[in-house]
Image (cartoon, rainbow, N blue to C red):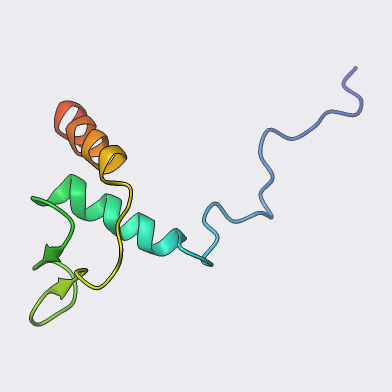
Length: 75
């Protein structure tokens, strides 16, 4: 008998919450894993690309680790 079985995942909760700095962090991770570094990208911000020179980035160490993990595992 299976009584009071709990679901594995809560499906009503979205996986990404679009508030605060979450979207900026996701953009930075995407830029670091796909490009050379995060300040300029021709793939985002049509037609001239986008620049992140005006945003303070204080977490370059973990972004560097994510870049190498992306190279090793092919993300």
